[in-house]
Each structure stands twice: as structure tokens, then as C-alpha cells.
Image (cartoon, rainbow, N blue to C red; front, side, top):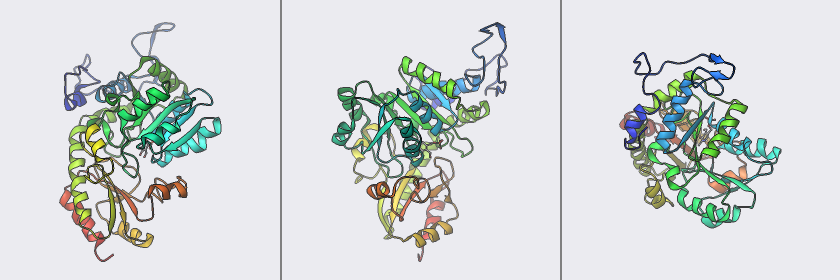
Length: 386
Ligand SMILES: Cc1ncc(COP(=O)(O)O)c(C=O)c1O
């Protein structure tokens, strides 16, 4: 869709521009196969639904438009998107990944692809020297989450792209943009080659679809990934694509509410003596607040905080909450809370967790779009006399 249109307009109109029936919303094409006029001559653009189908195509086009990319590719989960990207690397490639990433991402590298000869180094990519030193002649991919999960660290995307161009020019920089969403941050505009999303999170926004996406600029990279997308077959169903396209339409307004509510929760947490440290890129004392201001248009709905509590107190607090549901995942309209050390990051080694500050008192909040006063009252009652 024409780039002259602003985000919220593109979120509503990109991807599907109507059909012969005049339908305003796309039909869901459940057909697994498409008729051919003669052998190898399909009637339209589609042959077999794993390779492509109308609903996936609408969603891929819309995501590419929102991220400022040329090609979107959708997958059955965020992990499937990364697995397909890793499968596309040459044997014996080396990958640099951020030190603070989703536990399942680390598991995929350490327990699946390392066994198959893809080596990786985990490094704090917000430290330019450490990042540069981690690059090797066979580095093919750089994988960074910013904001990171769960410590909300910020990496300067333009800076790592510049270093990569000098010292590992053949490598691709991919940013996992799941926490920020394209509404708040567009890594491709900062020089990255690709963006990844767990569309399960803010893009889906209603905690009812698992999905993933890669968005890229370069035709040859897209062509290669498209080959692996079809060959590996970890693709989303037409129904899931329909739901995600529907969710995209409200992404902008949802993100504005998530950001507003998160700021109010951060202010509340600041008044609580039991809170030792708050991790939120919108805070002026956040180590990389200036970088966040440059590359983000808002600071998102995710907060982590270290509480001065032992594990029993933490469990009591979690048990008392009424509106913050104790659950993995994030980015839905409803508020969630989780304990990274025992839940999302249980697969990260204890040494690495200690290094990052993921201790027993760390809680991660995915602030939803309920009334902020109700959320604060819920926290107040759960924290009283702990
Ligand atoms: C930042 C981030 N990236 C990727 C993933 C993996 O996505 P999925 O659960 O859709 O496979 C997650 C899951 O929590 C995540 O938080």
C-alpha cells in the first residue's frame, strides 16, 4: 500500500483491497488446493495452501507494509519463523545473539541448531565493543531483541548495523520486534535486514492465535526464505491469518493504551518500598533511555521489576492478584504477570540468569488495556501486608 498513508490507515487497508463480491472483510479460504487450467498453469496466484493462500498473502502484505519492508512471510509461531531462518543458513555458520532473549529462542539455538553445527555467541549487543568482538568471519546472522526479554534492555539498531557492515558485511541483522511492534519501532528503517515477530503477542493482541512472521527488504533474501517456508511447512492456517489481519487493524490504538497504562503502573511501582528496581525503557534513568527515544515512538506495555521478596512472598503476591493473570505470553488486551526464572526463562542457565538479574524477586508485567486505576488497585491489594 502507498507509503504516503500513515500507520493506522495502512493497518486497516493494507493487504486486502476487496473482491468481486464487495466483501469488506476477506473471506476465509479454507481450500487446501487450487484448480489448474493445464498442468503447472494455476488459474490464479495459488496452487497449494502450504505454499501460499489468499489469507496468508493478505496478512504478509499488510505486515510488510507496516514494517516498511518489501516482503512478509508468515509462520505457525515465532519459534517456527526463527527455526526456518536458521534452517536457511549455510552449514557451520556462526550467529551472534543478544544476551537477554526469550528462553525458547536460546533453547532453539543451544539444544537444536548447535547440535547441527550452527555455532552461536551470546553477547550484550547494547555494548558496541562486546558486539564487535563477537563477530567472526563465518558470522551469517545477528539476532537481537530490543527491547529485550525480560530485562527490557535496548540495543542501538543503527549502531550494530553499522558495525556489522564494517566487520561482517555478509551477515544479516534480524531484530525481534515482538515487544515494540511496528507501531513503536521499525528496525528496517534503522538499517536492519529483517524483522521477526511472535505474532502471538501484540500483533494478535487477544491471546487467541499462535503465529510468527519475518519481514525483509531484499528480494534474494526473501526468495531464499520463501523456499524454506514452503519446504519446512511451518505455516499458519488461513483462519489464523484472518484473525491476525483483523487484529492488525487495532494495533495502533491498542499500543497507545498499553503504553499509557504501563507508564501509570511504573509510577505506582516507584511509590512501593518493596520494589528494588524497575526496568522500563521510558524511565529517564534507564541505561539506554536516550537510544530508546531515538529509535522508538513509545516505550511499550512491558515492565519488569525486582521485588525485595523471597520466593514465598512472590508466590503469595501472585496468588492474590485478581486482574493480572499469572500466565506466560504477553501483548494481549488483558494484563498478565509472570515469574521469568520459573516460567519463560527456566531454560536459560542459572549462571546466565544471575548475570542478567533474573532473580527470584523478578516479575514481568504485560500491562493490558483495562482501566489503569483498576490495575493499580489490584496491585495495591495484593501487595498490602506482604
Ligand atoms: C520476544 C519473543 N520472541 C519470540 C517468541 C516465540 O514466539 P512463539 O511463542 O510465537 O513461538 C516469544 C515467545 O514468548 C517472545 O517473547
